[in-house]
Amino acid sequence: MNTFSETEFRRKFPILQKLNKDSGLIYFDNAATTQKYKAVIKTSQNFYQESNANVHRGSHFLSAKATESFEIVRLQVQKLINAKSAKEIIWTKGTTEAINLVAQCFGLTNLSAGDEIVVSQAEHHANIVPWQNLANQIGVVIKVLPLDKCGRIDLVQAQRIISSKCKLLAINHISNVIGKINPIEQLIALAKGVGAKTLIDGAQSIAHTIIDVQALDCDFYVFSAHKMYGPTGIGVLFGKQELLEKMPPYQFGGEMIKKVSFTGTTYNTLPHKFEAGTPNIVGVVGLGSCLELFSPSFLTPMTEYEQRLCQYAYQGLTTIPGLEFLVEQQPDIPLFSFTINDLHHHDVATFLDSKGIAVRSGHHCAMPLMDLFKLDGSVRVSLAPYNTFAEIDELIKQLKLLVQGDETDQTSTSIKPSLESINTPDQTQIINLFNKANSWDLKHRQIMLLAKQLPRIDKQQRTDDDLINGCESNSWLQVSLDLTTKQLSFMADSDAKVIRGLMVIILSAYQHKTAEQIIAFDISNFFSQLGLMQHLSPSRGNGVRAIVERIEQLAASYL
Image (cartoon, rainbow, N blue to C red; front, side, top):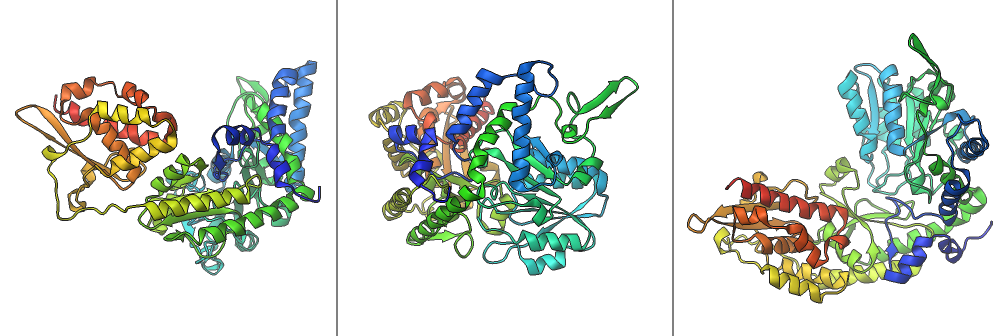
């Protein structure tokens, strides 16, 4: 195929047809996971209906059929990334497990105390924590490559940091926050120059560029199917055969053995040595069904369309007052992380969600990078080739409406309400309010209006002891006891306006109640009557539960 049609491509994703028809969903969270290709869904269903059997070990027709389908995909992936041998393709649960496998099976046996592992400031937690664990286990040292002003790994600094002590360079091909392609060819060459091995995290790059592991000459390359229109729970570890041969198994059990006796066990050959137990067969077979999208004849025009989307979205976002990108210049793939002055990133994402636009907010599993930017999080908009220019227009329109309509709440430094003076709407008022709001858009508006009724806690009065564990945004809770009535009064505050609105709702159930009444109250039933929880993102829902748990803990201390 030499041309790309967004309309035809979009039709191949059933969820976009249904959800856009029913609720007007605009899906801009593709860096987290892409939607599933129709052929993937069909193939997965057909496998269970027509070919379901365990692979490799069966002596019957169905097992042979399943094994053939399973191993054909290994050959397809080998071709996709131009590995020398199918033995170099190891199935994992995803990018995270692939990195952990290398950390344990290569790191533990090839690195020693004082050896250096070099990562970058823009790594996903999955490419940081396994190495930190290895440091705790054997005493390796982690060095960090800084970024340039555009968000790519700084090559000049890399020449200084990647020294003869470096034994492994583990970096991302494209950051899941910044969207810039790192100069991995030059970085791999630097590592090879000092005798170090290299691992490239390709989770964000696999769907956006042609990968040739032989040309790169990297030692390991890892990626996940679910970011390339395929199933969840299946990933790929590419490793050079000579390295994999010397590495011990990752897990132990069926399939990865050649012979077992009570006097000893011999392990299977590659790739099965690293694939213990029954694998995710349907995941592998499903992955095979989306690989047709990544042939050069299709990928090239598809990425050209992506670039047009990228430029259009970047230009549109630059017109939003107060919007600031985390780094300079347009990203290399359509992935944009930004903040908007005076608006908490959770509030931006929740507002867009109420308008049917799905984006990501938070630290994006890159807390060290957020620390670098002195942020607790950002908004991330990530596009795929099934997105449209019209969807980008709607995003820009809604962001402008949000900015124009926002009334920034300032923390008071002169008025300091006492705990005993705080009043909130009661449960009946809240239930009536939300029963009249028959859509998420209207419910969201009510939450944001309620946020204005919550008195802010003076910044000087906020303490670490008052912080609520489990809220992704900074949130505080204070309590006092009326010795006469034995009732508890609460003051609450949060950096995020949406959390402040939810705090008003929660306090309507708990404010000026005794500890016994608070512990006995059925908060789950209350929220069911409001019809709210199903609309809240997991992070917001977890925040609500964290607030409730903290209130109950404080109440229990007064029993």
